[in-house]
Image (cartoon, rainbow, N blue to C red):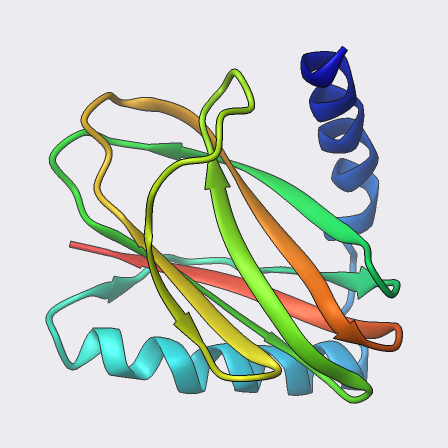
Length: 143
């Protein structure tokens, strides 16, 4: 049952996280995400082309599928806009198992670091922990 719920969330997100044009709120959320990611670029990480934007409701989350490669290190940075008070980023394997990551938490900005031992598809969860509905943007870097 958990696996079906996980897959259902993934398909719902596919329509949420892709948009043709970013709104002003999504642009501001991306700026917040880039502020966090800047610290990782100072440590030799390269920003991945592209980003995922969308909106989150209170106590809701978005799920984004990514392909990761063994031997690389990754940081997933997310920024949100008001009225979000606290967001979180988590990573799951293809079976829906929560993975252990390094975490940064800064209110409406968060990040998770991960080094996969196996190449494959993983899922990044962006969670609105506190606050009201808001826009978010996820970007990631690697080395």
